[in-house]
Length: 509
Image 1 (spheres, one colour):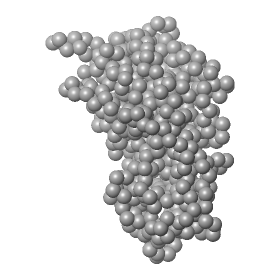
Image 2: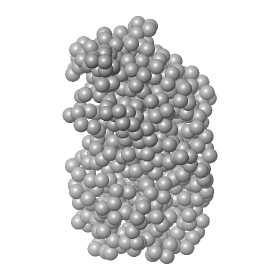
Image 3: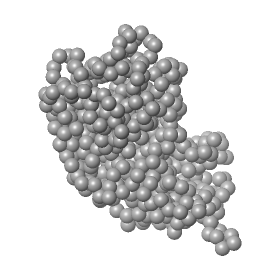
Image 4: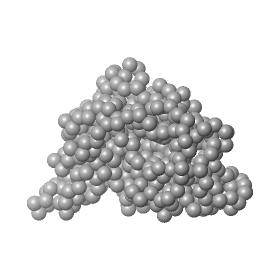
């Protein structure tokens, strides 16, 4: 991470819900107000009102099997191999076969190419290079290369999710391209997560596309990830979620305390790339806590915080740590939802340090200070999130709360998704003071619904659900007073029996 920016769960069967689309409180406008997209999470003290309490999505056998394939020994071997290149500084040798960033690049490429062989052609691997002209921390024109594996989806391949780790490293002096900079925690650990997920995903079919990238130039200024995000943007790719894994290698803080079961997920509030029009909507609806990135983070806690991953996902409502910034920021700048995974508390003697011993204290980012069981659990959190996103329907789009008239109920509208296995939608809501979604209502395969609950008092969201079990006509929940404008019966229990509870992140703003 560069200095550049100031209990075993029991599988059940359920349908997959999407990364939710949430709305916010009412606006003063006399037109339908557009909302954004995001996920849903369990609530402990659900308020009175329509719907049932929101619950996390338990992993099914398919996901449980995937997560158990994540191999601690392979992760450790990757971290040790990357550290053995001596330095992976962006300005180090690109031609030396045993030392420097070029040797690391070629080794990563070979690993990913080997994994792709099991995909039947669905996974492709590329060296994505460009020449960075002199700039901050780049004194001379330098080739920066990302190693990118793309696992193409079978159903909606245009929908994309991205995961990165950065394979460059640094010593104390950010311009020192010669001294040893093993970069075990920062960020061989993140690259190990990316490579291991590429291995276990290569032989599996996904509905959406997953991009798994080892990026360079992070320590010098997010150069590689900026280029990757720019290329995706120029190609018109629909990136619906991105995760940076940066410094995910240790569970031990600088005071020696350990927290081996927590990973932090940083998620910004006000979007980095917010337009003036979007700012106006956010201000009018009170959507400061409902950015697409916050919705993505809620989705992660919904699907990845359980016994099979063995981790507690601690969401931090910030873009990143103080004095630091990781590769997710490159994607936030393009307007996409993104977050950064990192360990719970850091030991700064083992980051951005020359390898040395001072007064009997070992400094340097060495593999001996990594916790490989911990990295394995972080990989499982990422695997649960990516798999659930890629197998669920996409985030609902065009979500609006209708504010043409003064009413004490709420009408929501949205666009129907293109997925052939789309079963319908759910509406979630929460009190304006609650951090997580508290209630959920199954509304069926509709694109408009009116709920007898005031938009002035709560936040709403919409999430798509796939056909784990097609929604059956059901009775409107007693507390719901829910009606479907199109006139058909309300869909029944869409969080029904299938592997994962497949829902997409919600939309909210």
